[in-house]
Image 1: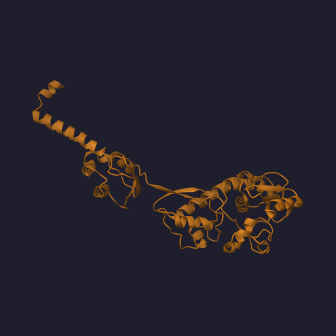
Image 2: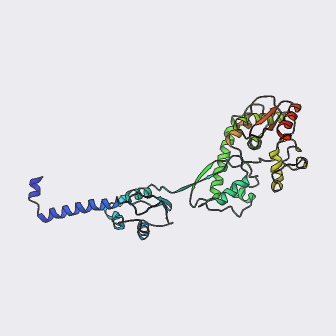
Length: 334
C-alpha cells in the first residue's frame, strides 16, 4: 500500500486527504447539540419538505450548522427522513443526529385524556371539549347527533363508552376518541357477557351494562362491587325495587343540588328506582371493567339491603329491621 501511494501524484493524495477530512468534519457538525436551553415543541407543517424544515429550524436559531443538514441530501440521501406532519419535542442536549432520528421515526408528541370510571357521558364530553390540541368536531352537536356520527343513530349514549386513558396527537378528532371508547366498551361488554353466571335476571348485554353502571355509582370501596351487585341481583329476582339513590340523582338532572329529599324519592322519573320496577331504561354512568364483571358474576349471599357507613364502605343487611337499625346508626344519627 505504501509503495502504491509513493507513485500517486501529490495532488491526488492531497485531494483525498482534504475530502476525507471534510467528510469527517461534516459528520461532526451533524453531531452538534441543538441550540436550545429548554424543551420545546416544533411542528412540521402539513406538506412541508425536508429543506423547508431545515430552513425554519435555522431561522429560529435551533441549528448551529444548517449547511450540514442541507448537504445530507447530496452526501447521504438515504438518511434524509421522510417527514410526517405533526409536533415533535426537542430537548436540551439533543444533537442533530438525534433530531434526524426523531423525524425519521415519526416520534410525534402525544397527549393523554383520562375518562374516570363512573363519569357520565356529559362529563366525558366536557373533558373532550377542554382537551388541548384535540380537534373539536362534536362540540356543537347534540348527544343524538354525536351518536348518529358514530353510526349508532337512535341509541342513548350513556354507558356506551369505556372509561380509560386515551392517547392522541395534535389534530386527532374528539370523534376519533369517542369511537375508540365506544368500540372498547363493545369489546369488554361482549367478553364479560360471555363469562356471565347462569340464571341471572338479565336478558341482554345491555341490561348488564345498565346494572354495571348502578354498581359503579354505588361503589366507594372496590372490594364491595361483587356484594353490591349481589344485592341488586337478588332484589331483581324477588321483584323488589332497587331503591338506589344514584338513579334518583341521574333522573333529577340539573335539578340535583347535592341533596335528595323525601319528595325527590317519590318523584316519578324514568330513572327513580324507588318508584319504577326493575332496571332504569339506560345506564346512568360509564362503568369500568370491574363493575361489568361484578354485574354478570355477583357475589353470593343473603343481603338485600346496604347503607353507606360514610367512609366509602357499606353495611349490608339481610332483613329490613337490620337495615333500618343500620340507617339509624350511620345516617340519621350522623
